[in-house]
Length: 276
Image (cartoon, rainbow, N blue to C red; front, side, top):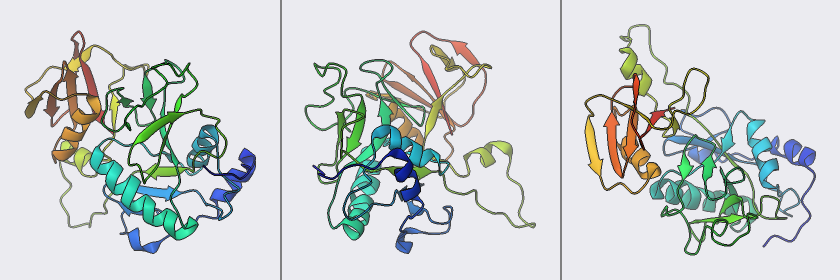
């Protein structure tokens, strides 16, 4: 537990401008000042040694949005271990001398028990990313624990009050920069270009008005079918393992991977997600 007063949101926004960057992680594929880890680019807000600028969940979202980024969302155990634990532990250790919570960009504030994430995915209640005994929000928490944080030493997610004082810092994430091509290079076909720099995140297919298309899926021959997938997050992880996977259908624990996107047809209980 952190025991110092959190500054107002305006002070938190000013504070993030003082980002301290560890050059060890930067490999040239991320914007200047962002740390490269795995397939993503990350930046902690400035973390005052006296913990005087610990934000609420809403303040943390503003800090990331002001940088054109979003709060971190974990889509797999590997990402949570490599980014949430290894990277975060070393970064916090260097700046604070210890490990503390940081916010995760998912909340069930709109629909109790349905955790919608900033990358367009949903975090299922039985995901293996939760710590044992969580989430509390849907099992007697009274709707108070609507936001998530992650503690590196525990390597798992907990739900908590979005406005809980002294709870967590902000870890922001953006996509890597597109790879540069030389004039002599042959321009890849559109589909190859689409998959050249996958972000690892997916959004549900939307209609022309930008509304999610639930119960609609791609009708085509999949490049791969995986049965017994426990939730959409794990299906997204399977798509991320395939170099040319551009989208996937998720229906009844079956995960259908595609190297394309296209017209969708009405299929009860089926969801189609497209790589961002």
